[in-house]
Amino acid sequence: MALKVENELNRSLLVLAITGALVACGGGSSGSDSDDHEDDHTEEEHEHAGARLIYSLSDDSGLNMYDQTVEEAEAFQTDVVATSVAGATLVLSTSGLTAAVLDNGAVSILDSGLEHLADEDGHTHDVSANATSLTSGITAVVATHEYFSAYDGMTSTVIDAETGEAVTAPDSDAYPTLALTGGHFLTFNGIDGGVEMEVVEPDGESLESPVTMTCATGSVLTSAQTEHLTQVLCSNGALLSLIAGEGEAETVFTTVSEADSGLNRLTATASAQDVIAGWNTDSKVLKLFNVAGSDVQSADVTAGIASSLILDVAALTSDEHDVLGVLGSDGKFFALSFHVEESGAEVENSNAFALASGQTWSAQNKVLADSEAFIVVNTDNQTLYFIDGHEGGDYHLHSSLVGDASLASLSDAVLAHVGESHDEEGHEEEGHDHRSFS
Image 1 (cartoon, rainbow, N blue to C red):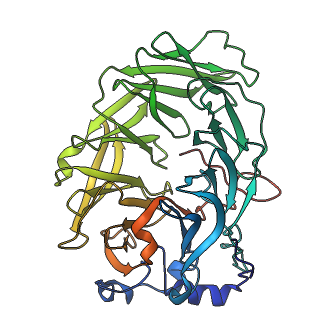
Image 2 (cartoon, rainbow, N blue to C red):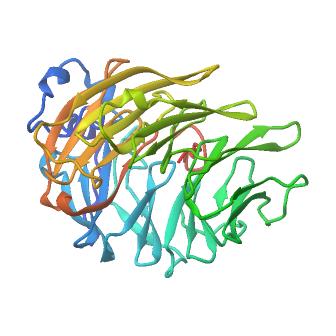
């Protein structure tokens, strides 16, 4: 059940609490080398730090939390939100402040309670969840710009990522409809043996010059989006790219396809250069893609991963830090700092280190990121590992924390946090930021 006591903290008290459990400087110190890094950084550097790791369990209903905005002794909390079944799916919004909870076919909007964390009187609220009109039958949810898009196997519904209210958007029958820059949408409809995609207006009307892409065989495996680049990975390995460019009167769309990408996962970065990372969890492959005019450039950066397999990948959520975090199957972590040249995206610096020795690492382990730092969750030893870098310095294992025993049955997780530009753009009245990445 949701917590009943509101966690209202004034700014000075909040800063003191956070310095003990920083997002950018780890959470605890058990079994860590944190003393090597803590003394070099002032309180002011981290006054906006604070995030909440919210997760579901495979063997129990309800959502649990590791809260970095409170003292460490209070950080692990159980049943912060009730769910009807175990193993609820969590999808973080592009703002980082809300998440969609898919619970036994119903969708609710999870409010992280962090909206006012970076305000002058910085404070938090309890985590809460509000039901939407999607009460049954939903099988998949994706974050797409300032929306969530839900799919029930036959139709899709697009909802506001903060309020949960349905918005006017075209239907899809094969994958959740995706929002695009310029107010357009990308629809997915089944054809004989495959899926056809089309860029359409909000009312479903085709563009004057139709723009389409096709998974010739199979289904859509996954997708990822930046502000101008949308990539769709087909189950047959084909990678389809849609570029939204600025035309004289309206958005111009260009399509690019790669027949056999060798990938089975995609994740978007927050880079201003529209970079998406693709990787394969079965045969080690890691590629970076970026927009170059009306084309998409691809760079294979697999050589920088000295592990037999890649378990998970996450990207920092600020365009101030173009860093990708990669977890290897042997417990090695790789922080890849990248930039875009004329020839494509390149890794300019790689920090590699082992998180722990003698531990088991599996596909259930996760990497999550906020705007400055990474958290790795090891379910086998129920430990959180905190990775950060400071003032352009190398990324390193800052600290680790043996967590709550419930981490052993972690099913899904999100790291809710305040984006760096949260109060600069977006809803005029509320200061909500809707930077386009997912």
